[in-house]
Amino acid sequence: MVWGVLEEMRIRSLGVIDDAVVELSPGFTAVTGETGAGKTMVVTSLGLLLGGRADPALVRIGAASAVVEGRISVPPGAPAAVRAEEAGAELDEGVLLVSRTVSAEGRSRAHLGGRSVPVGLLAELADELVAVHGQTDQQGLLKPARQRGALDRYAGEAVSVPLAAYGEAYRRLRAVTAELDEITTRTRERAQEADLLRFGLEEVEAVAPLPGEDAELAAEAERLGHAEALASAAALAHAALAGSPEDPESVDATTLVAGAGRALEAVRSHDPALAALADRMGEISILLADVATELAGYADDLDADPLRLAAVEERRAALTQLIRKYGDGEGTAAVLAWAERSAARLGELDNDDDHIEELTAERDRLRDELSALAQRLTDARTEAADRFAAAVTAELASLAMPHARVSFSLAQTEDPEGVEVGGRRVAYGPSGADEVELLLAPHPGAPPRPIAKGASGGELSRVMLAVEVVFAGVDPVPTYLFDEVDAGVGGKAAVEIGRRLAKLARTAQVVVVTHLPQVAAFADRQLLVEKTNDGSVTRSGVTVLEGEERVRELSRMLAGQEDSETARAHAEELLAAARADG
Image (cartoon, rainbow, N blue to C red):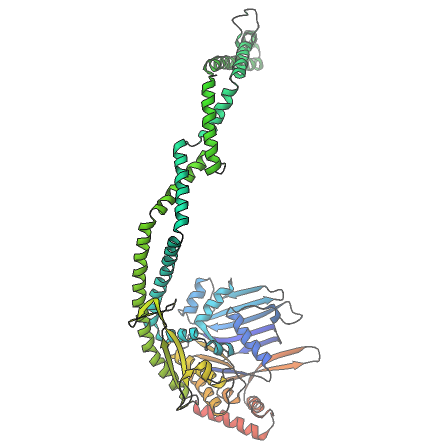
């Protein structure tokens, strides 16, 4: 069932394309043209819609920005539809509108279902919607890591489930091993750190500072250091307010204010304003009496003991030394915070032996767990490799390689520090202990060789197509884009590739950029990317070819001559054969 179809793309101001609408078939669409630049823009446009890197050099010269818009039919409930709706996108009668804008300055914007979204979301949807394959993907298939990934993808849950558990245990083992190495290799440094912390904590404990004590002592030292001046000032102020017993004739503030109050009280009933002033004068009289009383008590309580001042200064000196060494000059609170952290750290360092024992036990347990999981991965990959190789071999037979044989080599490298697989200690990594390599024997009698060494360009193209067709049966995506998957292929092999792509298009949408008429003839729809040049500006347009136009294009692809009767006859024969095969 096809659960996502790219119906149409509109491309504006992108490379050599000024403004073109690309209408795609739900089945097999072939994109052809005389030169590669325009065809490449079609592939590039789809790449931008799928979250690919935005290059400002793609913007057509003289344009402010390039825009690619796409219409993707996605039934409700499909994974891509669910993810899009989670991001706030809206589907218009089962159609998801996607757009990407790239400015000439390099800024990039993406919209999905009428909502501005991060470009990364388009890339996330691409995994659900489209499988893109081109020349670089063929080269990627040469890498052993990609080959192992292809095998794991084919194996499905038989590998993915233990691989997830293996990955989690592998990451934990690396963390435990790193911590264990750090503890054991830095024993001397950690011992020195413990000694310094212990010495510092003993110093703090000996002084036993209290929170805020430094500020309190500073205030007390200031008061004790100026005790005589403070006492003299308090006595003079008290005499000015309350009078001096030694001078009965002196005039004091309390007596004067009391007299003023009595004068106002005598006439307050004649004017409310004056009555208010009399009230305020009464308040002043009370306040003066209170201040005079407190001044008398202050002088009596003032301690001018030089022994106490010496003790305070000695205590302050001890606290200052602690604050400078352990409190970063921030006070006793910072010293106490340092002591709390250091005590916890010292506890960790003093428990190194117990911690080393715990980590060693966990490391051994994790290595045993990894050994069991690595064995499960090897067994699952071995079983899947035989099925995968047989399926790809069968596909190659339908791609004009009837005698080719594909197989997988699964090997491990012995390592005394590794995990145990098959009774041996072998090296291991984040994906297990298996070294996977895809082998190809292109004809009888030829020894299986790694495809990186034993496959020609055309053979590699067909192997990649065969692999993707096999995947389509076990892990399908709705749309496949092949960018010149037929490179290095011709003749009968090209016909077989066209036939196989048409078969794949029965269950998925297939878009192929091709230069081979044998492949294009099998397409349900053929698009022509054609350049025009008015002497100053080069443009490319996209045209749907039907009837006579399609025959002319196939003739050009066959012989380079649209009006050649022989080429036309051959083109019509190709189309007839493709229709009959369908």
